[in-house]
Length: 603
Ligand code: NDP
Image (tube, rainbow, N blue to C red; front, side):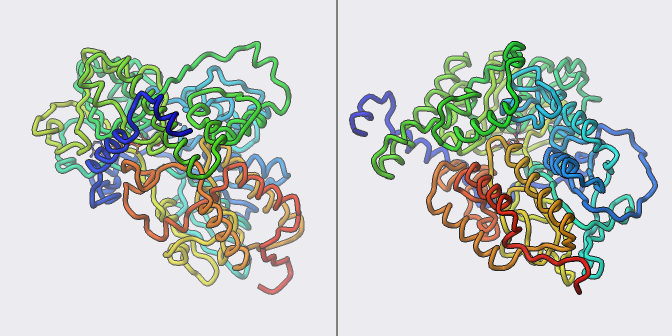
């Protein structure tokens, strides 16, 4: 059956396999993640918050609270909302930025928009009575929604903005976390929920000469509108006489390039690996449709999408976009053996990328640029992108693609960027070079956590984490985590954040109701959870990255992961499978796998 299917193919799978291998090899490098540099030293200013007035001060707080939430992005806000709904009032939210929003507070670059449908991506739409204006909302609308949630659920009074945690110690006597902040607050919290986000530390490419550049430069997550003029929807009038270079062509650059192309005198796009860019098809919200929605519609739509992008069969495709068609697994389901399913999956992946490449050829007029913009790897090797203006931007006379043939930028000089020995002079350099994605939990957080006996979480997890559901960890009582470590992943990331927030809030609510002062998982429960994760990994399924992929942050830059990273793996039996596990655990109402210390008992 497969042979006859191959006969109908318009491409040679063998030739593509070989091309993919060659393109991957061009990009493999021995330094892996070490090729990047952080923003310390000369680049410390890159991290400054450009959206707040300088000089903010407030009196330091000393207080006892039930729950401290670290992070005011969607994860932290959702945890706070669920706690409020459960009647927990004594909350503090510590947030580095000057407002709620997390990713949507920081990423205000021109063209920023959600790339998962806003009706499923923006949380609490039914609770707030809000309907996004477009199928894919732009960043300012999403940020405003974060503020709406903050107002509606009375979260502002709990927020400590422009504040970071400096230290966190478990106190066995009081059974509280003693937390200090960069504003000298002293908070004694019964519970701490960590919702610090996964991509908030910007990184720069370690290109030789980067520190010698004398023009203006910044990272996309701190867009400098004072320099460019304009705002998140474009119109950067101060670039009209400027030569601008952008380094990076990932999901961020795909949204930025059309805007820069429309505003800059000259734009050079320095590319190492092209993104796969499918059709977006954004459209204004149909008001009649919005009025027809019945209570419960958002949850239904969210679950329908997550099921489809996990390869599960559904009667209908409510979102019906590039994501759901990318994950269409109906062909694989007809396979009679795992081998046949794997082959059909590979063929369908080739076909999807052939469509992406054909799209490039049909839009980009210059054949050399068109060829360079074609991605040669499987769809899930890199974050799939969807955009209707990105490719067309290369048809502008002032936009030039500078392809580095997988090698990356050679050198940066005081005046420009060198590729293949040729210098491209620029006034401004924009780094769309992404964020640190590391298996090192506390490095990601930016502070260490000292649990029972003063033990640092960094040391405890030196060889990898141990948790129950990725939410609690032994030795760190009353610490709840909302993140990717040993939990699960979702294309619609807010879906999983929402479920982990619900779960964390449930544990806090039950503990407070039952007079439990400390909870932590048993060793046995942690071991069992790791066993469940391992079993799910062995079964396989649709997954991002993979050793055969072209390098990138998704597959640890093509290098063998450190054992610590392997131990960070999440449940691979599907997002909905993970959510079921959490739901069933809560339904049993036993807090099973957790050791409970009740008030009054000896510490
Ligand atoms: P990425 O890490 O995806 O992209 C970094 C880019 O920099 C890559 O194209 C990389 O090339 C390039 N690069 C690195 N070093 C060099 C070098 N030396 N020379 C030339 N190019 C170089 O970061 P993004 O900010 O684009 O995206 C990060 C993630 O954020 C996304 O994957 C997505 O999950 C999320 N995101 C979500 C959006 C949304 O709408 N929801 C929008 C934007 C981002 P190479 O590929 O070869 O490594």
